[in-house]
Length: 369
Image 1 (cartoon, rainbow, N blue to C red):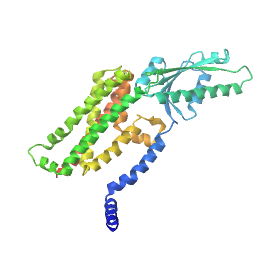
Image 2 (spheres, rainbow, N blue to C red):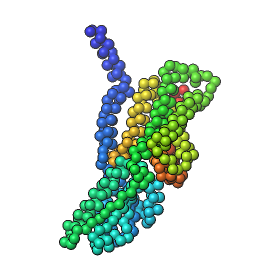
Image 3 (spheres, one colour):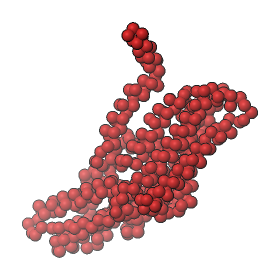
Image 4 (spheres, rainbow, N blue to C red):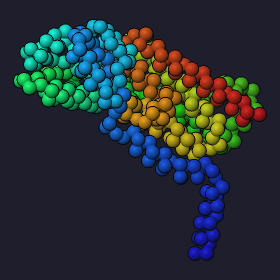
């Protein structure tokens, strides 16, 4: 037992001296509790809504103010036609559309029955259902408010609901794009960081650096196999999603694959950056899991809608590459959107690629020196 406790003390001292291990032991549980506590929620606020107000009268304005006064909906656009509303959806500017007919006020006061149409972007089925359900509640409360103010026969507002891009609310329509983003990030970034960290841990990286091969050629030789395998994996997931789960690819396939390659290079650059910082495989793996897998799953909109999260997490999600790639996939695959709809997320991914490559190259030169 004396030997055993001596060995235990030695391990405790070793852990206490290793700041990275301490950060993983105590930082990860705290981070997981905070992230899950704030992201796993069915509530939402400031959901983007576009309203086609064909009535343009006092009653319709009262209804719009009632709908947006709760803080759950944020009016982002006032398109004039349904075609403009669909353009708003394709550009990912709104998640819910409300169409108020021209005869809204007349039907409400004279016929005692008016109709409002709710149109939701169902590329995220659960989120779309939540928005429609809450919008229905707001419409019912508006109706009750008007009935309390009137001594005449009760007023009635009927609701017509339509789900764009995913009318059956199939979960696979959201699952397949998110899975592709997660797979590419894990395989490219994690495996790249592990393979270079392994060379550093075994001491063979020093042998490679003093060889006649240029450093850039060494890096490319290390990451190319993972890039090819990851791209093949992405194609396999797309094919399986199409044939097994009927997930369509309504837009341009070459555009989708080209932007898939861009995201793949961003993941590779992240793996290279981690490998230049990690001294061994264990550090590289834990860093990859903590900084890549969990944010990709929780803060990209894959599992939980970003508008439901606290403001600080919404800002953090802006630096998660998977968020922009999932937006690209949903726009091209489900909305048949063209280049103009994916230009902004593509620009963000391109900037991320340049910044990550520059940081990885700078750290690699420092390590070499």
